Amino acid sequence: TPPRFDLSQIEFPRALREEQNMPVVEIFFVTNRVALAGGLEFSGEHSDALTYGIAEVRIPEKFRLTDVQRPEILRQNSDSLHACILSVRPLLAEDFHKILHERLEATNSVHATLFVHGIQNSFDSAVRQAGTLTFGLNLQQPLVLFSWATDPGLSAAAYARCREQVPAAAT
Image 1 (cartoon, helix red, strand yellow):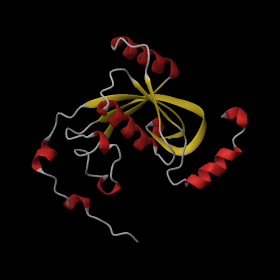
Image 2: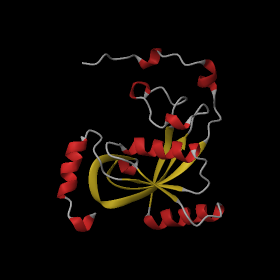
Image 3: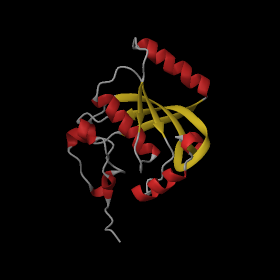
Image 4: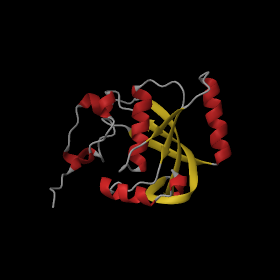
């Protein structure tokens, strides 16, 4: 069994603990994952229905583009050091498209940026990645995340076997 760490004992530098003015980015998302907790969380299981929504991600002041992945050991107490999901708001498809269109008009853009994560990503991880990419690349137009159903514990070999079972028409 791996050693357990008492995260409450980790002392962060005062400057990092007291920072309050961290930027927040808005991420539009579409997912085919099974919704949990009223659509505020999502499993790795596939759903036949799409869920649309908007998430807000707080970006730490000391952010560097290489900080996309969040270390697991610091997960509970590291919000001042790593991207943190502040909210997840499911929307009806019509409302999603209306708000996305409003954001595009506000940025004088006709294109959004689409981000599709790789295998072995949880919904939360994909949202944090999308947030840090939006901020790190200084995107002005909206970013739309498609978070597809993928089990974070799925191996590349198991993924390849699943992929072989998908009919050619679906790819």
